[in-house]
Amino acid sequence: MKRISRKTSVAMVVVMLAMCSVSFAQKKSKTPAVSPYQTAIDHAYTKYKDLKEGKNADYIKELANVDPNIYGIAIVTADGQIFTQGDLDSRVSIQSISKVFTVAKVIEEQGPKAVMDKIGVDATGLRFNSIIAIELQKGKEINPLVNPGAIASASLIAGADSTAKWKIFWKRMKLLPVVR
Image 1 (cartoon, rainbow, N blue to C red):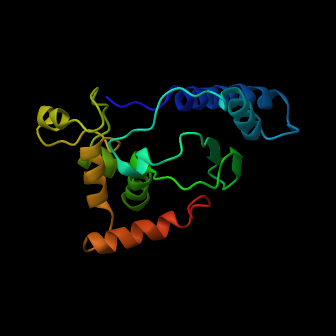
Image 2 (tube, rainbow, N blue to C red):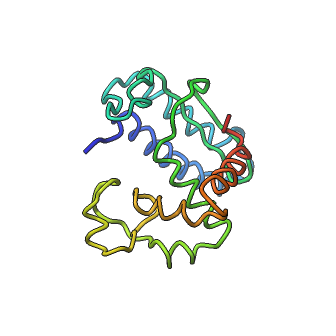
């Protein structure tokens, strides 16, 4: 099973924990001097920028070709604020994170009940690309964040055919402040 590098996973956890602790402290203090998001990102970036563990996935050409030395963190809040640190100019393939945007579009169009009823929301306990997960569930795709569920999610996006669905999806993606 391929895994994300320790550097990436540790940085993600540190940012989440720092955001929680800063959020708690912010409740005590009405006006923080610096954004808690930026503080969390700066801390994680500084702590992990020199960590050189792990390797790029080599089973997908676009991932194998990414410079393993680039490192950047970004948070975009629901109200459109953007907080960043590190290398933000390199273009990389988003791969499986696209599943989140796909299911978000379905929820935007049809509501969360459509995802629960038509796809499911249970964790499989298996790898993201497991064929066994499909066979065990006998047609229920289980979760929009594993490959079979992501394919089912894409089918639920409004549009007469795959070209129309892609245009609708891409139009929405271009509204995000970090998509170029």
